[in-house]
Length: 340
Image (cartoon, rainbow, N blue to C red; front, side):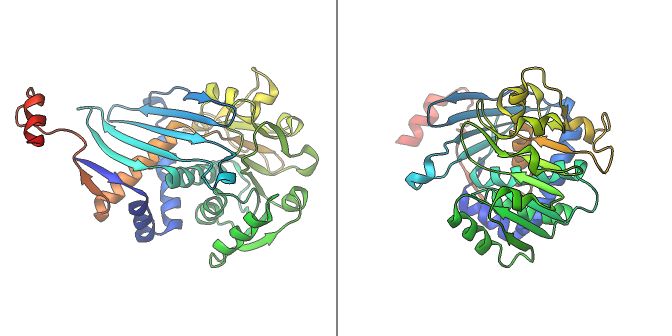
């Protein structure tokens, strides 16, 4: 039997655990797995690009578990009443090859992206950061705000989006969050006085959502919107004066904001900081930037976390996705018996 976590089941799990607790625990789980980076098989994701979006397959494994996610990114979808990103994931035992979990990953991807952003900021932002600027109030925004509140103690969110409806939605959804929400009229206004800046837009093409002149020293930037070839959010001049951290450099060179700096751009893989192999922030004045495109290990951490939590709390249902014949060599007879 395979555990199935559909969207209602994940919503139930979030209700039982609490969204902020879920995000904080997932950030911890992800950090633990990043510390074991060298024990995982890693590769850049397989992507199929079209003029309107991308479909990607993201696998990874260690000695115990194999996971993958199938995900899309279609910035034009909201105009059709559809989500920009949807995803499904699977977790399988390495020892038997049997799938053990099939999960919705549209909501879970938003959760794991926010948890990863918070995990990176714990390593790279100035201690005591309490104000975050959030550029983009779309589907990812509330998760980001709550993850930073839960994992870093952020108390104030300065936010801006070119879509006024999205800004109103963001404020409405977080009205009871105990965060101080400050609506701003521009990117420059939003980032003024912020300790941390998160860019989370779905724009396609080479953009400069965050400009060099808007950002002073000592800030940490989470750049999470640039995630495919030819799609960027950060001014190249700003990138050039920041210390840049990434998930998996071979993938980020192709898909991240650092593609603006050319094929030899320097960056540190975040796992090295977590494992004590490289320094994170080295001074209060340093400008740090996490160029996050999303990596399969983050999906692995999310799937393992959900699998463990769902089993502990009795959430989800078992479905017969794998045949269970009495004689494992008689698959034909088993299927014929089921159909009779």
